Amino acid sequence: MSGLVFLLAALVLSVVGSLVLWLRHRHPTTLEQGIDDFTREMQALAPERRPGQGRRPDQRYR
Image (tube, rainbow, N blue to C red):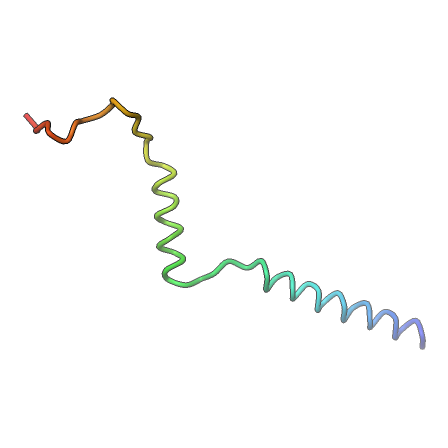
């Protein structure tokens, strides 16, 4: 009987610990979080602009 109690206690501690870890490390699912993730990914994909490269603001399309 003592062995069964030990196994049940270990199982309960394992389930509670797993639940705590899952709750702490899950990703937010709000709409704002989705927008922020998309913006961050688009900025990561955007080419870098170096000083002196690209169009100057005073130039016009020809």
